[in-house]
Image (cartoon, rainbow, N blue to C red; front, side, top):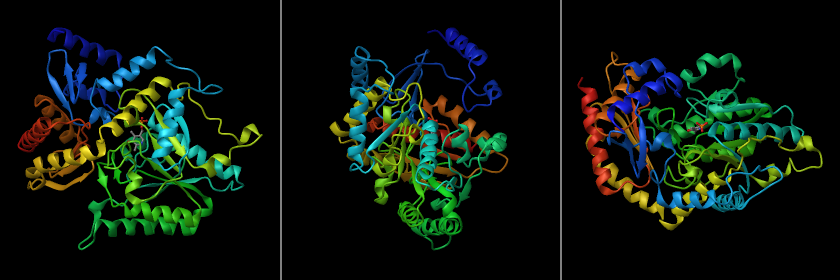
Length: 446
Ligand SMILES: *Cc1c(COP(=O)(O)O)cnc(C)c1O
C-alpha cells in the first residue's frame, strides 16, 4: 500500500465508520492508523511502519497477532463447522471448553453460559442472580452493588453497575439505581496504612450496607484485584476474601468480572485465586479467545444451576444470543488454553514481568511519576502534570507521541499503563521500556 492509498483509507473510514469510544472531531488532530497486518507484538500499517501493541489491542490479545498455533486451530475448525445454534444442538469445541474451564476452578464453577462480548456476560450474571432469587422465593432481592469507579461494560444493564461518570452521564435516566460502595484502591492508603488496611476499611462500608439492606440485594459485582478502566486501580486480595465472607453471611451473590483480569493477566489464571475464593458468577471475555474472536461466558455453581432446573419453562434461563457458543471462537479459546499449558505461561510471565519491571525502574523513581505499580502483567503509573494540561489532552498527546516512537499506548487520563501480550522477548522488553521513557519525557517537556 502506498502512502496515498493509506490516507485514502483513513479519509473513507472517517466518513463511513463511527469509531468506538471516540469524539470523532478529535481525529482532526489525532491520527487514525490504518492497520494492514500484525505479527507477534507488532501491528503494521501500509507504509511498513510498525507499532508495538503494548495494550494488547484493548486488553484482548494474549499470544501475539497471527499466532501460528491459534491460526492452525482456526483453519482446522473452519473446514469442520463454522457455526451452529446452541439451543437444541451442541458441538465438541463448546463442550471441551466448558469442561476445561470448570477444571480450572476445581469444578466449583461447573456450568458455563455463553455470549459474545463482555457487557453481555455482565448482563447474564446480573439477570441470573436476579432470576435465581425469584426462583427461590426471594422476589425482594433485586438490587445490585458495585464499587466506586467500577467498569463493567456499556450496555444499559452493565452501565448501571459502571461508575465512570464520563460513560454514564448522558444515560443516567435510563439506568437502574445501584448502590455504589468504596473501592479498595491501594492509592488511598492514609499515613501508616497498608494496602490490606485500605481493603478492610472498604469492606466495612459494604458490611454496613449489607446490615441495612441485604434482604433487598441480589448481588455485588467486582473487578478482582485491578479496576482496569478506572485507571488500573490495584488493590489487596484481602478485599475479595472479606467480600466473599460478607456475601456468605448476608446471602448475597458475588459476581467476579474477570473480563479484563482473567486469563493470567494478574499472575494467576483467575484473579480470584490470589484471594483463595470463588465467586458465585465469574465472567470471562477479552483474552479467552486469545484476542481472535468475540467470545464471552459466565461460569456458575451447581446450586444456582439447580434453581433453574424444572419442568416449568419460565423457571429456565431463557436468555440467548445468535452467536452463543460459536465453534470458531471456542476453538480459538481451546488453542489459547493449550498454549497456557504447553508453555507454562504463568511461570514464563513471572520472568518476563521481572525483566520489564527492572527496565522500567527509572520511571518508578521519576520525580513526575506517582504510584508506580504492577500486578502480574499490568504496569501503571500516574503522571504528575500541571493543571493546565487536562487529563484527556495528556492522554491524546501520549498516544500521538507514542505512534512516532513505534508504540501503541493509550493512557487513561493521566495514568499510563502497559498491558502487553504474553510473548514479549528480551529485546522487545528493552525496546518497550526505552520507548515508554522517551515518550514520557517528550510529553512532560512540551
Ligand atoms: C472490557 C470490559 C467489559 C466489557 O466488555 P466488552 O466486550 O467491551 O463489552 C466488562 N468488564 C470489564 C472489567 C472490562 O474490562
